[in-house]
Length: 113
Image (cartoon, rainbow, N blue to C red):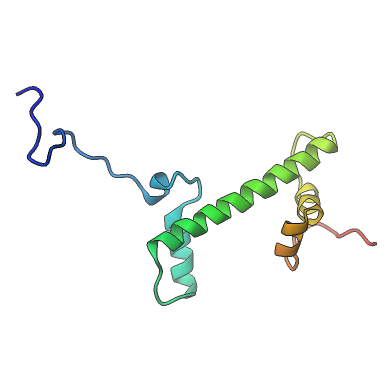
């Protein structure tokens, strides 16, 4: 019969399953973060919310670095982001410079001061 509902009050449509990444509205895979953490044996137990939080943080840091590198490329009159612009963007930002202080970006020579 039209308009008939199931005993639980919802319509007769089948529910769609969504990945954890889609539910969290992220671009970085929550399942990939889980695999990396499990393979690395960083903890005995992992919370499901910790995996979503980690994926969100990695996505945010990536977008911030790319935004700053894009600004550096635009300021230097280029249309593509190069490794040098990523390095300049990280080192010119106080917070990112401290966070990535010991990180080496390949094929980029640091300027001698």
